[in-house]
Image (cartoon, rainbow, N blue to C red):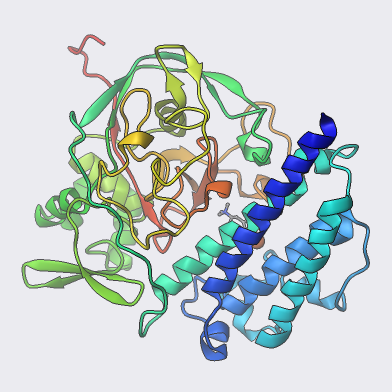
Length: 439
Ligand code: AVJ
Ligand code: FE
């Protein structure tokens, strides 16, 4: 039985590795100039992400797991170490050229697929349920999402194509009451959950209301038209300074044409779709909108309870819709579309309480800073999450249209600086009950 189970794990891992690589190839199927150019100081040249994907895969799966010798001179490791080289400095490094980069990732992958066929998936914690391979799948998919953001930042003709995301539909009441009480936050059982999602622990969350959908372009436009960007009352003090210094007047990639707006989406001008979740806002913009609307951002625990808690059974579920893996009916994930879908487009993906689109479409800013759960243990490396704990970053949840299902769960935690908005970030609002509201 163990053998059969292992075979299924291996097949799943091989399929996920291949899907990740198909996506990497699609995102790097550009000419050498595009591949080596730095499209924004916030991003690496695509050729860096490409070889970094291969290097992490070699380090973890060939050298650590399989005990192999390095494929290239060890000085190469340093070039692709994200901690030794800030993104802005990466174009100046003596990086592998495009052809050797492509050859390197292919060589590594060929050997990894051989290792995956043979290696026992137990006996070492790193191999339990194929974790090391799952970690590398997620790592590649995370960099694919980063490369997708690089494509969004690049100037010039469109290079990527995908069908438009579906339109929205009626979702009923604008907010949902989540009843107070404990739920299980985090996980001990998701096989590929990263260290910061562990361990599972009970959190008592008092009743709160959460928006049925993410905040839309149409709603956000009302904040702009009401002078929201010019009124310091709505802004966090540091947010107001940033708003002035950076000259923020609208989400990134919005363009005003008199009284109408368009959005630059992967090299095309698209009319602003009022029913789509707003995307490319920083935490400070989300926070200001919420205050203007008389609301606030949800805490991370509130977001996760809204996504997982089923009041009928008292159970904390894997996904908003239940325990099944995400499908195309549940959520806008996996770069099937190059934009968020209209709100209400995924009724099959709504939560037990009727909250829509918690998974997919846009990463949702929460009010929480990034820290370890009680009992946190850095694993398998401190630089995945622990070195980012503190008050500098805010947590985002739920994944975007550019996140692969293998790299998002209801427990998955993303984080970034509150000024960042080149990521596919949006938000939804929440509020505590009023004193006269008996809930
Ligand atoms: C978890 C998305 C913040 O991309 O910086 C990639 C993931 N860690 N390589 C990032 C990651 C190492 C990370 N985020
Ligand atoms: Fe990385």
